[in-house]
Length: 286
Image (tube, rainbow, N blue to C red):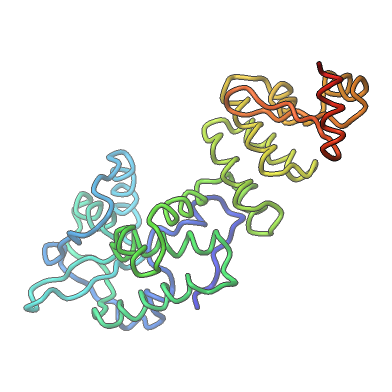
């Protein structure tokens, strides 16, 4: 099994740009210099668009330092040239930089199929954390050119389940660490994700979950209020099950009263012990 990627070095460390050590292999003798003109991209590559500014930056770096990591290729049927498995960005940037050859590791289709199978079996392990599963799905998508539907079929899961799993990789670093360490669950994580683009509120929500023991429902109530433009204090207030008004009502009725905020309004919850108590409550309210 490949060494786990660090969760403490940001998203770049969490999501590798190329295949891991299990695919690169340890045998440096397998690295070959291949003509750029003999390489073709993988038609099944999920990424169809490449950021022009990033490509230009990579081309400038390659022109200055060369290609530091070999690309991964398989020989095309008929033996004419090679198809890129991983490293299409470097191939395009190297061509832009004017290079004629690229370092590459040639793998057989059988080897790649074995590695793909190992990753799929790894995802199905019961002790794998949600983030580790998400990283494995990412590899199958972006490094083996498998569609989400194809991965879902291999795993016997719904594509929407894998899509939600993959979104966990977009969590802020602190939230990823908390999820990896079991301090928050997937429900909490999805609530934090729902505030994407609002880093201050994401940080405040995570703090409340970790330090105040907020439930998933409380986290979701915070999200609803925050999305409506409430201040942090107002959003936190929407998670409270008891307020000044509920305490006044509880004192007046002699029973527990709570409030539950929802996306549209909320619910006032008045507790009763039994049917007789319910009749008494009805009379008091009448």
